[in-house]
Amino acid sequence: MSDWLLEVRLFTVRPGTREEWHRISREGTIPLMGRCGITVVAHGPCLNDDNGYYLIRAFRDEQERIELSQSFYATEEFAREYEKPLAEMMTGYQTAVIPVPREAIEEFAKRITG
Image 1 (cartoon, rainbow, N blue to C red):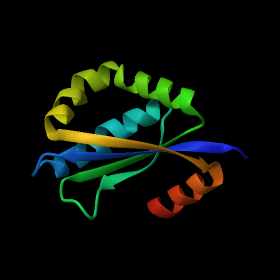
Image 2: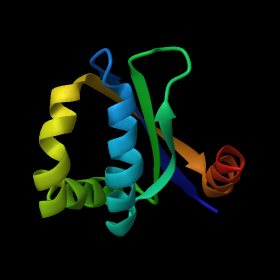
Image 3: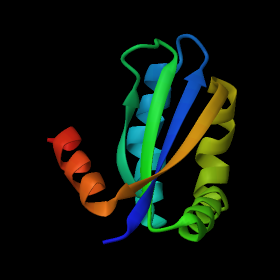
């Protein structure tokens, strides 16, 4: 099988806001990503940074990554419910996109989610 793209986002949030960021992610943005067709492999607070939060997503190719991401951010729900509070909590983020065999992504997702 061909490689998929693993997108790793590392967010930096303002001190004291990470638990709320995690709640919004868990209850809102992650389910919305799923409804938009985005495969979320894992997400949560970083263990080595009190203000860090990670999001790992998988895509078939770069075109899918761009199109699905744009469709997520263009939803009325994201604009109405999440855009402003998340922007106020976030101080920055970095994104890395890595080619990974699909089987490795599936195994990683199984192991991290139990």
